[in-house]
Length: 263
Image 1 (cartoon, rainbow, N blue to C red):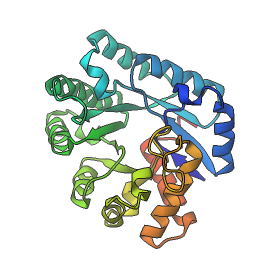
Image 2 (cartoon, rainbow, N blue to C red):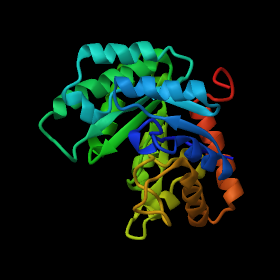
Image 3 (spheres, helix red, strand yellow):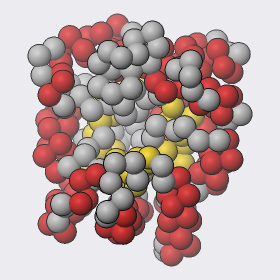
């Protein structure tokens, strides 16, 4: 069985065939799907799906792109949602410097608030990073020093595309790396980077409906396609698919603590 650690199943791209998408996921051996939030309404939508289907879990956070207009009241709503039994992580939070650099400080402000929330709530943090690796790691390191309980800092660097030294630095802070469709692209260097990252530091994801892996590149992504990610990872590591599925599933269940209270 495989865990898709990052899929936006609540988005409108799945409104017409969500039940079929879930059936295909089960058919592909995907036992568990974790849904990141992007804003407060998406938390509610994800939790509703969790309550309707087994094997689904949710996160609570404000996506960095949403922080341009987000209010402190929005963040307080995130805090409240973190006590819901379907919520297994704070995410996705982080920094996105690709689209708009006009509110970097505001993004960083909310990122720090999410880090502190994750530590206070004793939940993993799932991080969105686009062209902001240095600042992401520097802020995490600063917050780890600041924290009363730095050992509670942990999580996943979602959509990992960086050199191995970044994975090592993240691991020292308690973070796995989440690899997805980009790793399967023929014009990407991510496969070579991931080759140097130990398997016990890796989880797999789709980021559905975005970034579908080969051979479905360009299509709407869905959780069943995480199997293609695992297959490519097995090729890179020269391991069996079964071994990759076993280890990445164990990693995902460990970081989201799915073997105890959330079973």
